[in-house]
Image (cartoon, rainbow, N blue to C red):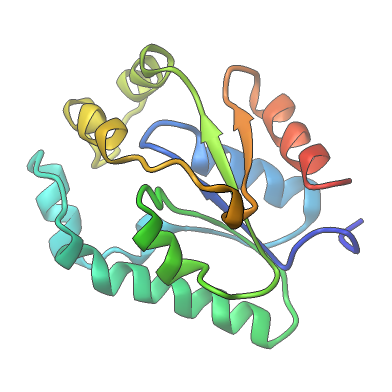
Length: 170
């Protein structure tokens, strides 16, 4: 089932867009390992976000480098992976994806109201709803040269994941 798919699927979008949920669902459907970018954050970043403070680009440098290293290791061994990361700015995607062959960006997109409602329903997550506006303000949609696909998050997780796979050409 994976012969037409990229080596790595990078799920991107604002907080609350469903990156973790869809990443886990795709992992089940494709049998690929899933890595949540939140796992790559240094402890200082998590503390800062829990306090309701947005990260700076300087804060993000070690985080982005760690995600890129994970992708490089996956590709080097001929593996497959699903990685979720907000990747809101082009400069972040340039670090994570850059010129790497076999990585495909998937933007999970939804309205502010839908995503705010989902964030409000989450429990035990370090990203407060109060930072959602900064997420939308920071989001730089992928440009055509990034060859990203855009998938609405208005459906169920099964529908969204199936849509991702279909848009990837399966």
